[in-house]
Length: 363
Image (cartoon, rainbow, N blue to C red; front, side, top):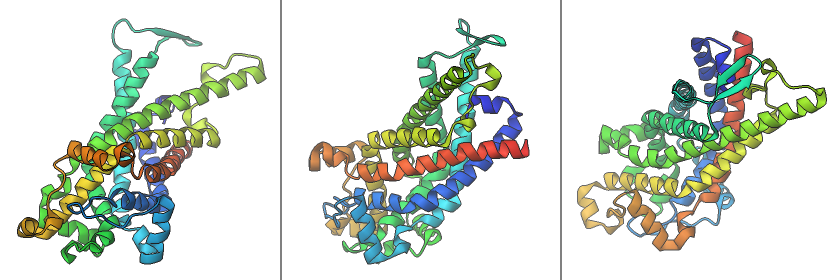
């Protein structure tokens, strides 16, 4: 969503357009990309899961998809999908609406600071942000939006990833008490064996993974959209041989589909690759907590397969580096990019277009 779009309607209507656009975008994107997320989870969990025990090794994301489908069927590729739709859709709404709120609020606060620079427009001199300030606004807004969204999304993420890797864990001799018969059953078992704190115990690790991703993503995405708007305006000025007026400036919802796809895909690919080690560590810690809780304290003491292996994010990253160097840290990075690039592309492109559609239809 661009600030130009939001300023043209009342705050309440702007929020409504954000909510409707993000809800539709979140549901549709997950239908298409959830199998890719499952492949990513299987790859990242395929090493040193249970006290040094090595899991089934996949050669890559495509191999993970094919072998999972061949041996376990389409239902396994959509493991945890119910939790993602029921909990993830509100999470997407909070995420995108929250980002727009924080971005506009921080921008407004910076604009009102003394010593503000001004940009000349057809309506006069208006306060403007420097390039460095824009980076700060988008980076911090992405981080803050993720901090709030994780309150909704952490339980969803825990259930989803336990469901995605549970069959691999069974093949390694993990207790049947770890088996779930669906997302709701998984949530109930986690609360029963680990308590309510169990579904939020990974909040810090999840935020450490998704927070930097969101911050980097929105920083890249907003910059790419700015370049696209400037490029289109230059093309218009050349074709019309006149300066584009402020009233005819290009808004985000007016960007051609190809531009939105390129912006969201590029930003999603780069941000997901850079933060892949954090996501891998988060996943392994979540799976480890599930194994320990399912085995019980006595079994954990007597069975080395259930021994606690990682003491935190830093320890997990260190162990992954010792296992395979830099390649070990980026294990599953390709699958993460293959998942996040189309996921962010579908989500953000639909969000921008749906928001514009609802603004035109309901406004």
